[in-house]
Image (cartoon, rainbow, N blue to C red; front, side, top):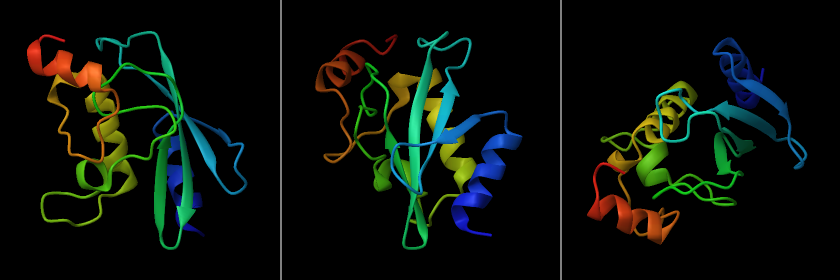
Length: 129
C-alpha cells in the first residue's frame, strides 16, 4: 500500500474524518479542535498529498494562529522534522497539530512558517493567548 493509504488508515483509526480533496490524489482531514482549546467547537481542514516519498500537509481552513494559515504548507522545520532532523511519522505530525490547537502560545516559529503576523505578535505580547 502507498504512504498516503497507510496514513489514511492511521487517521481513520484515530477517529479523524478523511475525505477526498479537491486536488487529485489528495485527502482532506477534518480535524475537530480539542474541547479545551481556544478553538473549541471548530473543525479545521488539512489537505495531505504525496510528493515523492513523503506527505505534504497544507492547512486549508481560516484560523487566527501564529503558525497556521490557509493555503500554507506546514513548515518542515517546525512541524515535520524532529530535533535531530529526522522525518516525523504522520501520527507525530497529527499530535503536534492538536498540540498547537490546544496551546497556540507554544508555537515555535521560523521565518518560513509565520501564519498570521498579528497572531504571532499577540502571542509574544500575551502568553495567555
